[in-house]
Length: 329
Image 1 (cartoon, rainbow, N blue to C red):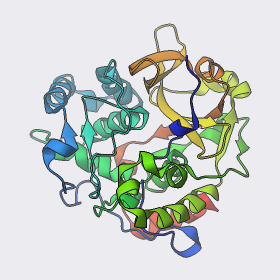
Image 2 (image 1 turned 90 degrees about the vertical axis):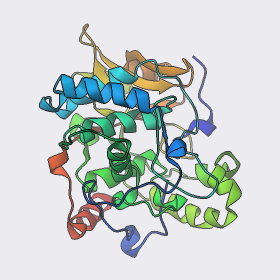
Image 3 (image 1 turned 60 degrees about the horizontal axis):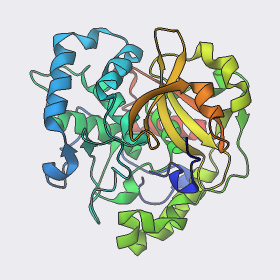
Image 4 (image 1 turned 180 degrees about the vertical axis):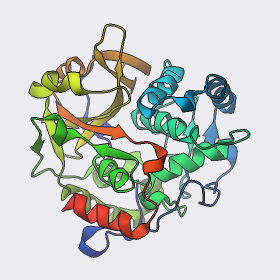
């Protein structure tokens, strides 16, 4: 397998400028209450409706809502197995930011995000599920406070921040330190978006976004990010569960993480890494998590997030801000 380049560092959204004490001052919306998240044509923001309808029909027919979130994650992930890999799937316009879904092609971020979104959506009773239902779930996890105001800076671009933001809102919990052997990452320079701005349509076409993006990168660099070094990952693999979100920590600067996928425990009881692979050009079930890490010299370790059920969502804005302040210290 080819060595990953710095360009693959996971810098994938955001809003405004960090507020008081470095905590973003964003509003909080619920997936059940937020306005329609469509600011671009549906043909632009949602691709693969037929596949969506087929997957959801199967989930309803087989009552996947009766399974815990860990099992639902795997059921939906398996439906995405083999989907072609497409890079930069979130860069859908030059100016208008919008929640989006693409069942025709996934990158590593949109694979885990779509799997999580489907797993959450199916728990909300509907006579019939629509594209908007999934887009609302994507908006809820992709953007700070669950809000997208059509601005590129609304989006969470760095995976490390995604863990903090979504834990503060009760969507997932970072269990890295609970698993053991965790260390804090210090001295990391976060600069992917502003250094490689030519690769991102919004930053390339809107130069005025680059300065506030740099302020967000400075905010991300200060986050207390912990990881499990790859030399220790085999020791904690027995504790990993189906559907755990695995952030692959890079050893270089630019971002904290270079890749992301989920854990899937196959019939041989091995905790494998399932991801949208740039090398295989599709969604695959790969080696064990530790085996995958050891295949790349640039991989330093992992961050682990465990998805939570939808009834754990934090909808009170004061509680959300309090949780975020507590998490970032």
